[in-house]
Every structure is written in structure tokens, then in C-alpha cells.
Amino acid sequence: MSLIRFFMLLSLVVWVGGIAFLAFILAPIAFHAGFLPSRHLAGSVVGQTLNVLHWTGVTCGIVFVATSMVESHVATGTVGAFAGRNLLVYLMIAFTLVSMFSVSTRMFALRNEMVVVDSVPLDDPRRVEFDRLHVWSTRIEGAVFLLGLAVIFLTGRRLS
Image 1 (cartoon, one colour):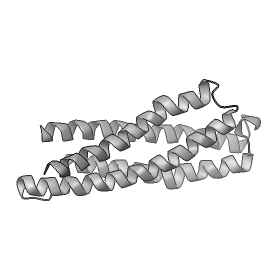
Image 2 (cartoon, rainbow, N blue to C red):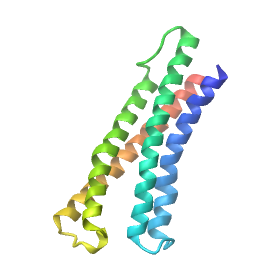
Image 3 (cartoon, helix red, strand yellow):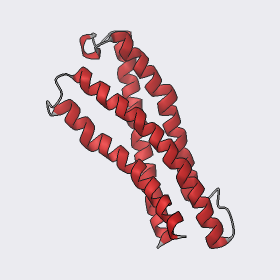
Image 4 (cartoon, rainbow, N blue to C red):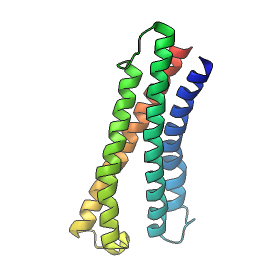
């Protein structure tokens, strides 16, 4: 049972910790600290990191739900597929998939079309759309992060 709980918690820590690292450490350093020579390069690094984080998140979500169901079955005799923590993780996975296959895909295409986003006028329709999608990307990642914190709380409360 402790191995199942370990993988439940590990999947949450990797996913939510990855989002925290991207949002609070990597992106600020890449864009604001002058660490990289251009915002274009910073956007490339953060964009590729976000892509890896999305796949990591989906994988972690699947691991969490599977181990959560096993833990519920062992502890209570029921699968618990619709337990609150699992419902929140389903939502986290759904948001991540929307971000991956809708928002990020469109941002990547626009970025390739504009080549260097900062060189395109702010009123250019491509730049306006890119900026709008960036706002949505940030909102979605923030929602996944907050949901992840709620899942950590619910899981910690259940396992204590």
C-alpha cells in the first residue's frame, strides 16, 4: 500500500512542481533576468519546456488516477473513480489537453509565421491573436496549478 501512495504523491509532486518551476523560476529568469540574449530565444525555451511539461502532466495524471483507484479499492473495497480528487485530476488532464492541442498548437503556428514575435507590430492580427492565446495559456496553466494544489490537499488529508 505504501508503494501505491508513494506513486500517487510522486505524480502530483512532479506535475504541480513542474508547473511551479516553469511559472516561478524558468519563465521569469528566461524573460526578465537578461539570462538569454533575446526574448525570442526565451520564448523558444519556455515553449518547448511547456510542451514537455504538458506530456509529463498527462502521464502523471494517468498515474495518479490509476494509483488512486487502487488505493481506494484496497482501503474501502470500492474503485473510487468519481472521488473528488480524481474528478479534479480529470479536469486537470482536460485543461492540459486543451492547452496542448488547441492553445499551444495555435501559438506555435503563429510564432513560426511571425518568426520573431517582438518584431511584429502590436496591432498586427497575428500578434493580437498570439497575445490573446498567451493570456489563455497562462490562465489554463494557473487553473491546473490551483487544481493540483487542491488535489494535494485532498490527498494529504485522506492519507493522513
